Amino acid sequence: MTLLLALVAGALIGLSLGALGGGGSILAVPVLVYALGQGAAQATTGSLVVVGVTSLVGAVAAHRAGNVLLARGVTFGAVATGGAIAGARASTVVSETVLLAAFAVLMLMVGTLLAVRQWQGRGASQDGLHARRPSLDDPIITFSPRFACQCPRALKVLITATLVGLLTGFLGVGGGFLVVPALLVALALPMEYAAGTSLVVITITSGVALIARAGSGVAPDWWPVVALTAAAAIAAVIGARLADRADTRRLSAAFTGLVLVVAAFTAAQALPALI
Image (cartoon, rainbow, N blue to C red; front, side, top):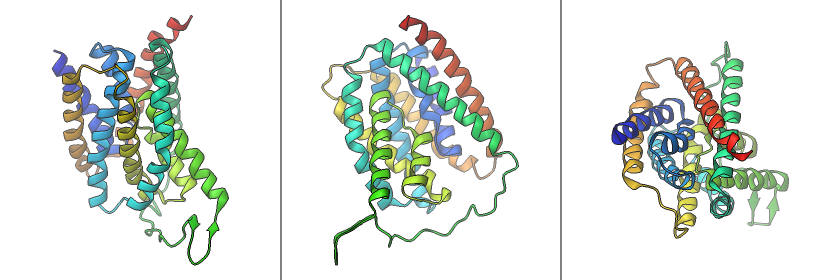
């Protein structure tokens, strides 16, 4: 029964990642805690495996489709590693009650943001979706032939990347809902490339956070995590193909509803424990 739950939950996570470009990993922690019986620290660690592998699969698929700006994704991810390490270390010194309560608040915020985005997206024009690929000849910092720095943009990258890393390291989530806007604001990427490039960032920060947690003495029950990850990775590929045929607006609306339901349940379980 545990294996079946892991496979079903992994399929939902992967379908969301593949069809909608992210979001599904936010479900990994509550699934691991409430459906598969793992502790909060175990779940946030195991979630990093699910997030990292599914993001890697999605990033490869997006790169093949020409929707990834690899150099910018790697650069942003490298800047975010400091935050990822700090977040991972911080997660080991707080109680599981605080960890779950923080995750519940995050889920409620994400669910609300998804609902607002869904409402604002109604009737939006599809014009300009296929923007031209931005050139890479406008660097933020150059050293040759002379030093030049677009310091306000550099500061944006540093702050947003660090926040993304902290979120990933502390709560074990990919943070695609934060990475995509961060790439839009800090690196001025067209929306067409932001979702795919965000998967590169998430792969890097998840891997770094997982390494930082190694040796903390908290290890998840690996078999459910492996089953969850495998199902999510396979479903991500199916979801990417489904996105070309299905109405992604309906899929997004259904996923938003699911996140809000899970967020309400997680909050009802976690927040009273703080009192």
